[in-house]
Image 1 (tube, rainbow, N blue to C red):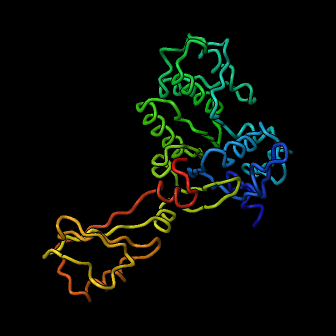
Image 2 (cartoon, rainbow, N blue to C red):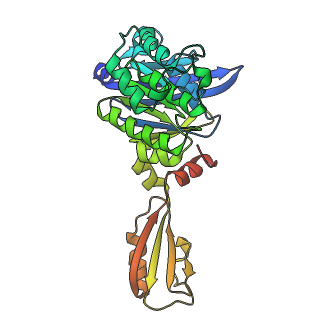
Image 3 (cartoon, helix red, strand yellow):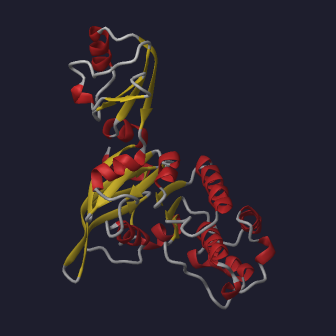
Length: 311
């Protein structure tokens, strides 16, 4: 059974540690990414996300622990793992003296993969690089450099695509186009590991989310399950008759009257369903015309867990 799990999982991280000058950056984290999923790795600046990704990509040596990609150890069998991974690093990394066309034609060969003109042309068209093929990298704008990095990461058709802040500093049009393309290649079988400062992107894109803070993994769960478990829900009640005071027994729900007492707001504690409060409302004899529920999203969960706003 253990061997089967290793083969079928896209990535297995076990007891991963890393320190720099004696200061721990990653502290014994463990997680598995299933083949074919979109997995979010979130955390505030300095949480250890990029260090973890750089160890997965093989550009930073492991302190201790192990990383296995599609059944291959990324230290002992690095030729296999490098070929299976495509990485878009947070920092812009370009080949200054090549044109876009030259760099993309050459890059698959770095992984021992033959250039595929049809696939290369598809990447060029989908990422809007066609008008810029004859430009050297130094002539590209920041957004175009980011597009080139995405094309370069995909040119050898990796089984796992790692996106470390891929939409940082890019325009809204590219952001939406990129996520559409990411969904498309994911449907075709590419596994995605994503970090982003845009929490709404992670909430929309990711099947599961892991949250790091101070080098430790503090949450790992299906996205919507994590939100339901840790976010607060709000009940908005439209009343038949206005209230002048809060009914006894509702104090634990942070009640608040709005619109001259015609609307009552109640906040449910994280993880609590609406059944208990609805029973209390019935017992109180309130006449309710309508009821609406609002649930906060991933940003509130992130702040709750880390105490820091933004990924």
